[in-house]
Every structure is written in structure tokens, then in C-alpha cells.
Image (cartoon, rainbow, N blue to C red):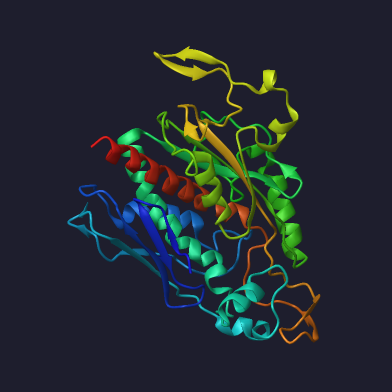
Length: 360
């Protein structure tokens, strides 16, 4: 099973949704960086379940413990082990699903691939797996900000058919995003999104949405032609997140409808460096960062596990009606925000380390 991400800053996540613990092992973290659990916990707090009535009622504090790689608050350059205990486990909620694969979930595909699966909560396909990503991403973010001033901010850009509308890419902050539980980038649209999530929750249904992200102060020159382009690695990272179904950067799919004369980003002088007057490229040209903000969007499907009766089939092919039990998000995008930020940080961390090592 592929559970490792990165080439120099390598992150391996472990754990299933209802096992004793989940976490990550990081190999390649630079030595000499100040690091404690307090640097990691805030992002895990933003990801954890039970934050509001808009998310799953599963109660988990998701307190991280650094197991290795740090002594006296300083990274040693050795593997960093991170662990979060699963406290609120209810594998009994999934007994009915032992014989009935949930529609559009990974139950069937995991069973076909391995001949066995964790039937409680989806195992490795569960959103619990993202805890390790977020913890590792927090470490990457700390290095990126302290060394380069890089800022990464994501927000909910759409819930169902409700769009957030224009957002100031240069000024939006996590404090502004977190001002409402739905984490919308536009406060004027946040309540409408929250109302929609509440409506589908009350009907035992679910709804999808979009998360946008901007990465600011990225130096020009990050990205490795031809196959490890910055935008290609971001696409890989984002589409590895559970429930993600689409990725676009810069003008994205709308750019395919434009003329080249309108879509091009003319170069201008910006404080002693070349910049661009527009940014349809999303900060990436030829797979390499150009110094402008990198921004992209990720589409998430509605959570597959719903309590509505669904006609389906058991593993043996016989007909069944499934009313899924358990505790599930009616909409995943508010809690996906820190996961998107974490995966962006892991991509950028790996690329800046490649650049640094190349210069040695």
C-alpha cells in the first residue's frame, strides 16, 4: 500500500479510522528547527471532528504526541514520529456494512484489491487518515514560513450550488476564514452555506463543495520539469485527499474558453523583480513557480455514507437496502480546509529542500 508522500521530506501516514491510533513518520526534516506539539496542535484542532453542528458528532480531541526526532524542543534530523490516539471508537456501528459495500465508498475496491478490509469506518479510506498529513503539514508550514515567509490559506469556495464569490487572494487570513464554522472565504455567503449543510443533514443526506487555496511569498524557481512540475505535484497531492474529485490551478477549466491574448500574463516590474500584471497562470509557468501567488481549487464529492435507505447489493450479489449507521459529516469541505493547506505545504517543503540541496 502506498502510504508515503514526498522525495526528500518524506511523510508516511499510518492507522485506520477505528484502530488504537493514527499518525505519521517524517523522514528528511531539517535538523535544528524549534519544534513542539504546540506548533502542530492548532491545525489538528481545525481538522478534528465535533467542531460544530455542521460536522460529524464523533468526539475526538486529536491531541498529538511527538514520539521521536525532537530533543529539548529542537529537531535532530532523525525521523519524527507523530501519534494521535483514537478515543471515541464505535466499530459496532458498522456491523451491517460487513456484508454490504457502501455505494460510492471504498469498501468494494479495497476488498477486491486486498481480499480483506477494515470494515469499521472505512479503514485507510477514512478521513481519519488525514490526521497524519495535517500534523506533518504543520511542521512543513513552520519551516516554510520561518525561512521563506510563505503563507498558505485555504477556504470553502462553494457548498453545493452556493459559491463564495470573489476573495482577496493577497489579504485573506486564516483568522477570517475561521470566523464562521463553514470556513467560507466570503462572510456574506457563509450563513447560506451553513443553512444548506444543515438542511441536507436533517434529511440524512450529504452535499459536496469546493475548497480554494492561495500560497503567498513563494520564490520563483520551484518545480522540477518535466514530470515533477509544481502544478502536477499539487494535483497529485490534492487528488490523494479522501473524497476529492477535481483540481484546477489559476484560470483552470475556464481558461480553456479564453483567447490567448486575453489569457496571457504580461510581465511588469514589481519592486526590483519581474512580476505579472494578471495571474491566470496561478503562479506557475512551465511547471515552475514565477513568484506570483499560487492559487488553486479542489472539488470534493458529497460524503458517500448517508443514512437514507439505498437499494444496493451485498458482496454475494444479492439485493439489499442499506441505511448506513455511524457518525459522518454531511459536508466534508469545512474540515478539508486544513487538509488542503497541509498537502500544499508538503509539496512546497519537498521542492524548497530540493532547491536548497541543489545549491550545496
